[in-house]
Image (tube, rainbow, N blue to C red; front, side, top):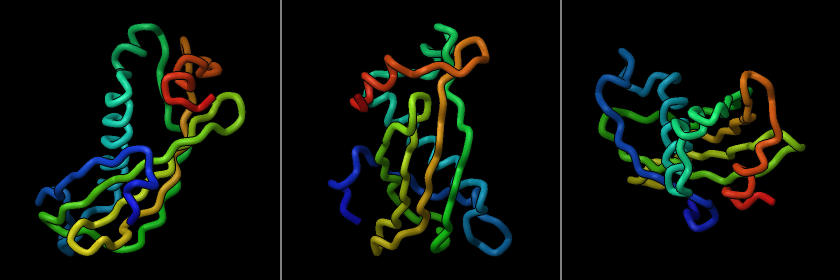
Length: 135
């Protein structure tokens, strides 16, 4: 992993209750990790989902693609790394990878596509794009 090749990264540790009977992280929990990292990234840029919502703007996930490469287990420490890009006029795409810290093993490779809506209608996320440096 080359953390420096990503815009943002955050470390997380697997909690026991996130594992299934086989002792590995349940597949659905990886989406929680990815979402937490996206929220942390926006916070690091001075942005807030709550503030956007108060302004009538909601950021919506429209598509999630996840390639599971290797499982995490209880107490594994890992890092979620993020790169972002624009796709067309309305979409912001988060390319996110998860690496286990103990051996730098790639755990998950994902692509999360999002749009902004205002009062339930898709909008061009102009201010968001500017704040994220995507212009």
